[in-house]
Each structure stands twice: as structure tokens, then as C-alpha cells.
Image 1 (cartoon, helix red, strand yellow):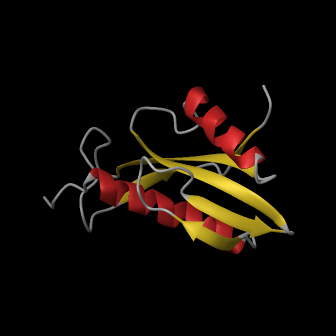
Image 2 (cartoon, rainbow, N blue to C red):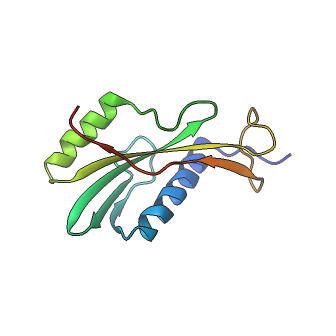
Length: 122
């Protein structure tokens, strides 16, 4: 059995997954922040519009689509000052052989990620 990934390593893995999707969707990275509590993680440009993306690693069995409303409202308020759109990207990561075990270094894992969720006025 390998070494369990740390919170920072899981966060970096989630960011890589989201970053690859953003890149393939034509987003241009203006700023990247890999600290889990420093938001947003990505500031991107697409079609001359700014986009703020908050990335979270979500532990199994939690739903990666559930997000912290208060946090996302705060990020959205900040984004509005820059006329930016705000997105949440929750990435569920779990051990492929047993979802109750942690994700281990150099071992298979399952990704539960359905893409960006835009945060709009409620």
C-alpha cells in the first residue's frame, strides 16, 4: 500500500483536472493560485471575458456538486468588481479499489467531476 495523498496533493490533483478542462475549452490563464483556502484558484480569460474559478477537492462520499454558498457569494461579489463570471469546480476523488480508503500516491483513483457550475444571482 502506498502513501496517502496529503490535502495539498489532492487539491493539486483536482486543480490539474480542472486546469486541463479549462485549457481544452479555450480558456487563457491570467492567474493560478494553488492554495486551497485562497480563492479563486483560477482567473481566466475567454472571449475577452474574465472568469473566476474556485476549485475544491471533495472527499467521498460527499457530493462534488455541493458548494459553500457563503464562500461562493463572497467570491462572486469580488468577481463582479472585475465584471468576471464566477464558477465552482468540485472534484470528487476516491480510491479505485476501495472508496473508503484514502487516495494513494501512484495508485488508481476515481474522478467524479461534471464540469464548471456557474454561480449566478440567487
